[in-house]
Length: 184
Image (cartoon, rainbow, N blue to C red; front, side, top):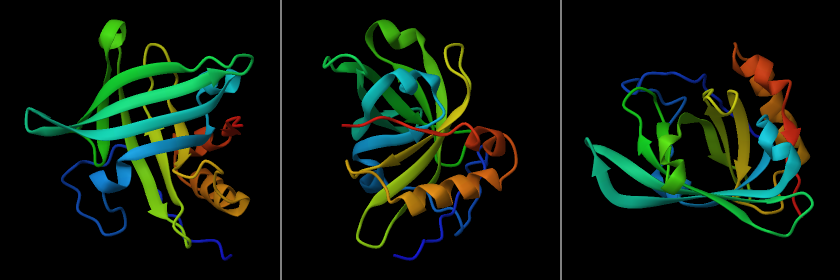
């Protein structure tokens, strides 16, 4: 398999930016369960089988579309599945960006994230790279997703890391801290 060209954009591009180099992901592309295979988020070092599921909601807030956001994971030493529920509202300030708000007791927690790269490999495997801004609970970071439970080929992961390391800050520094998230 030849290594595909993987385009990643810097975070913070304004939503009015129109570019063929960085097409916005469609709701159809985003919908479904994504497996977090690599990350810089320290929380995932002590957990495994991390998934994030997105589903479009019928609600519109201030003219912005929303997604249901369900994160599931298991601690390394337990079979218990933990869940984080939230709602993503399309950001008015960033291209392909979303503003997350927790549900239930987590409603006071918010964060901003952007899908800075996405695509489909030969054979149909879908991938995405997200950048999340620093919050009072987490540092800024990067996640690499795929809809394939088996993950992405090592060459694709290496290409994504190489692309991120070649970019300006903050992505360059974050790329050095990417680790594989355990999955079984």
